[in-house]
Image 1 (cartoon, rainbow, N blue to C red):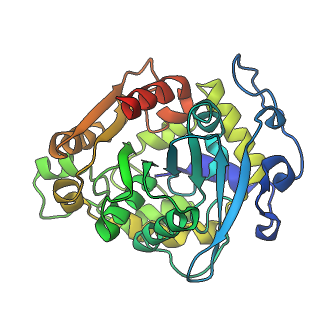
Image 2 (tube, one colour; image 1 turned 90 degrees about the horizontal axis):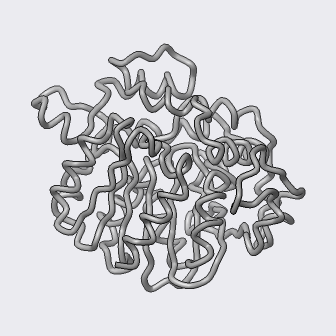
Amino acid sequence: MRFLSRFVLTVASLAISTSMVLAAPALEVLGKDFEFPNKIEGMPRKLSDFQGLQINTFDTRDGVTLSYWEAGEGETLIFVPGWSANGAEYVNVMYLLAQKYRVIVLDPRNQGLSEKVEYGSRISRFGADLKELVDHLGIEEANFSGWSMGASVIWSYIDLFGTKTIRKAVFVDEPISIYSHSDWSEQERLDAGGTTTSAERMVAGYTAGAPLNSLVTDLKALERSMLKDSPYFVNSGAFASEFVKTEPEAIRRVLFDHVTNDWRDVIAHKIDVPVAIFSGEESTNLLSQRWAASTIPDATLYSYTSDEQGDHFLMFKNPIKFTNDLTSFLER
């Protein structure tokens, strides 16, 4: 899931009206160019250096305008961001992968450039939104990748609609159940990745500034999110903060539902496509990711070391290794 430090940054950032988001080059939709803080060899120095990046929209059946970022040609690869996250944060990952794939990143409802509404704030509705994106694009088969809460959205998609449209699936560092049930054994908690016994306190901590401690939620991911320990991470965070406004109430709505879902039955019984799971030594979720990898019939676990930025934000902090590993998995 997404964490408080990035949330604080985006709350103070520049707003983009949903009405501005049309099917157009990103530079036109966002209204200006952007120079990334860190100059990195082989990566865009400015937004205008990312040729072919578009921001498009479609309307869901329940009347919500959702945005999606798109670049590249070839086999389709769909990314679903985590809680409060957005396509702008994927700018490095998109740039690298668009050289070989058609890359799409969905801004979930109430996040990124998508419309803010007071209804549909459930993971099941987010899963239906993903299905409607697939239908809108006329996609018969694609690779799906979910980071953090985005993995839960894909699990919901699989639960509701099956795997017919999924060629391969990628899950990045999402607990199987964030809520830890009181009747669980310690092994069940570790396998599921449970980190809280109070969804209300966790939600209040992330969205209203209530006190957080290790009894309320996992603090390591929050701490790691504050580290400016990767120039790639700094660049994508600065880009997102410049162009995307996060509304606290809008993102709060889905968080309780997200925290209390238990996906163990989907992991154990409903995933019948090849799967890659990414986690690392600096993530509290690694044990649950090992359980998922051992339970899904055709799953591969990629565990990053501390030196490889193996925390909850590994794909943004180390996009070169992540996209290389992802490409190897998709092509094998």
